[in-house]
Image (cartoon, rainbow, N blue to C red; front, top):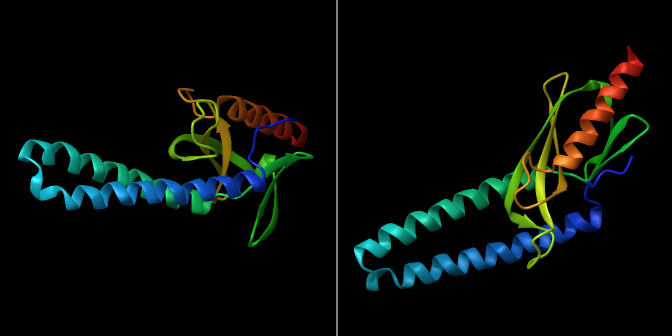
Length: 162
């Protein structure tokens, strides 16, 4: 089964561009604070809430990315490989799969096709496991191909185990 999960080198690219994006966002915030005294009240009401929203969304995605680990599916098992170790989860033990778009986390800049989605697996015991998958820009749901393929693999695994 060919699923567009991200490999370990792709994860490292995402980590690199996360730092680049952080640098640009920090620079925009610093420049805005420096020019704050020269802004009119209308400009302040437009720029400051926008920057706060961008910083908040970036922080949320930073935390989501810190929970993600490279994953793959092999022999009806979800294999998660992280610095903490190697984990194999039978697909029949996964209760649900959801995905969310990523705005700031990318694999490379200046590309409309290389966007990411956060994939969350909820296990039967309530535990949640996270990874990243490829997604298109305006794809609904995020990572549609991966989501459908994973759900199909889960259904096949549950049918075989029954």
